[in-house]
Length: 175
Picture (cartoon, rainbow, N blue to C red):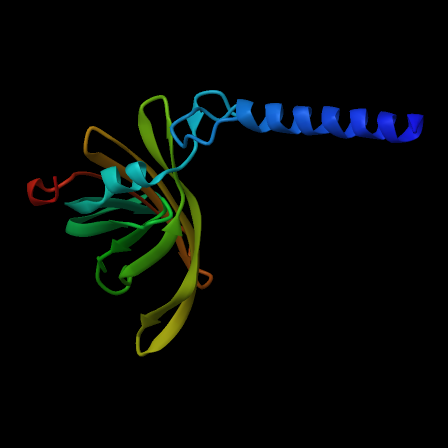
């Protein structure tokens, strides 16, 4: 009888601790992440804030040579899971042609009032002189007050890396 009573007391205590632990946690996506002070968990509202069309100059450099490509369109779509899809239209011309890039499921987060697009790895094949040339790279970015800033790095085959920056304001029709 005493064993059964002690087991019952133990089971009640475990239940109380479990309920107390669950009731004290937060499932609000706008709450700061305790593991990274100043970082807010990704959520749909951040993705929706980024969604829209942007158009401006893509500034690129390859081996200290500077290039500018005018009127490059970037379209961002919000996903229901709080990620974004980014479409960067093709820009440049041979031998500096960059194919259209569709980057899916990019994570976003907020830090100190800035929406950050988390670094994303790129990999694919681009048309080049009638063949396909493999490429790798990365893209990351941020947005504050409707101004999108991107950093894009691409390497085609064994060619040197192309480093590009892009800053554009969301088009009025997208606001």
